[in-house]
Length: 267
Ligand code: ADP
Ligand code: MG
Image 1 (cartoon, rainbow, N blue to C red):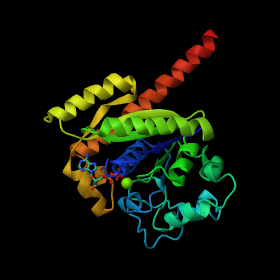
Image 2: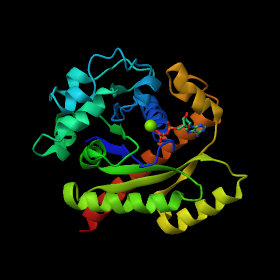
Image 3: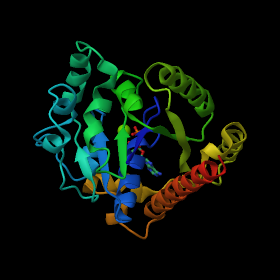
Image 4: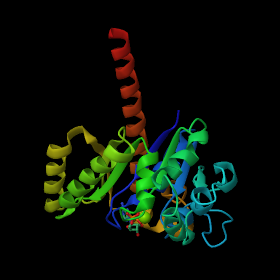
């Protein structure tokens, strides 16, 4: 059964989209079946996947509002080797339309139910706000991956986000977990970054990924070439970091699996 991971942080510019696209490409490169859903009206994940957001036939709008099945809205030709449900300005309209519906918080969860078997990983790129689209992402997801920059007010924002996730989870998705916290655009030479990083680890422990994404210009350049960094410059530290993150997530999943089998055996 595929795992659905929402990539969320109510702050913009923290590396959500960069993480979504590069992590998805890295997972796809390990022969996993991967779907990316672009729920941000800016459509950055769409463009970064080599898909023209102005030309694409269907988007998350048709999925959420018109209830077209995933098979009809999905784009299978992307530069990252994954499937994509595109996002563009229509997604803003979808958010407004959703308000009219009964059970509007679970539209995405219902839409994905028939294809969860088909994918190993489904990554949802969330908009930089806690709107109804983000709520849909969180109710559809098994877990939330939070990218963050280690800067002064980051922890405050993170605590607010974690608080919101638990409140939301209590209402729409009691099983929702924090998948992990990812330090992005990291600079080891910066004392403040190291301090915030230490606080983060003491607060969130194992939830903080060991893999750190450094600031790397290739990661910033790749989207303008319509591709994840690994197909733009595979030797770049940015591309390698996201491959390492994919490895860490896969290992964690294996550990969880064997732990739960262990528990079953002893029970
Ligand atoms: P969000 O989706 O959270 O708004 P983005 O992933 O779009 O954030 O990142 C914001 C900006 O920072 C983009 O221009 C992106 O290319 C750049 N960026 C993201 N991660 C890195 C990184 N590790 N190194 C350098 N630039 C980065
Ligand atoms: Mg984004």
